[in-house]
Image 1 (cartoon, one colour):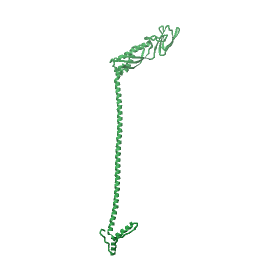
Image 2: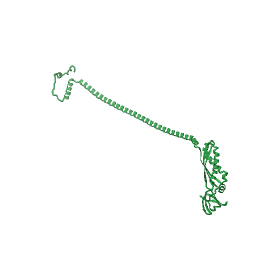
Image 3: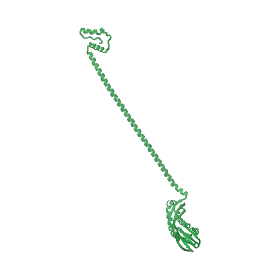
Image 4: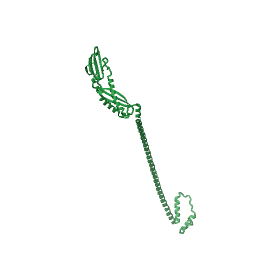
Length: 329
């Protein structure tokens, strides 16, 4: 920021280091340089100040593409003054010695010149290029064309202006056209999203089906094992019953054989006994019977012997012959 202090017929001027100052008195150059501080006579002096720092110029261009679509281009041009004395000869950078501000608008004049030159380069490209190509390649192409065109522009070279950089932030059609261009892509993205959702759901269904099939297979396997278990248990039970029946049959046969053996022995003994009795004398049999009867009786209160019983026996004994058997004996 410039500082000018008045002391009557004289004034003191102090400038910033980023500016180049030319001091004229009565039309003659007295001093020049960067960031000077000096005394002047306001009545006869004039001070010129040219900024040397990098300046940015925001540009917005409207043009129509080769397919008749309105296009807006936004760019930023960075420039600086490399020859302040030369630009000061072409553009008025004189200061108001009372306020320290420019008497004219030199920076706006310089910006207008740069804007027109840049716009010319942009228009030359936009009007010859279809909209889709502009949207795809336009940013890089416009930046390169504007930078190269302004750097080689004789009007800027003779002013001592250097182009530092050119940045193109956007090339856009109207909102309706932009929306129309976005619709296919949006629909495609939506379709891809729907397809992804469908695939995700299909995958979920497939996983669910696999889980259900796995559970079904597990249940089938479990049922089969239960069936095998029941079948094995049945076989075991039948085997147990068969073995128990066989054991019972063997035991019954053993008992039957034992009974048969015992009964057979008893019958054989009785048969032998009867055969033995058949060969004995009746008197002996009578004696044996009496003995058995006496052994079986606990007490005998009365004993009756009839003549019919012992008569024949006594007669036989007296005769010394055997006792005859009566009919039915």
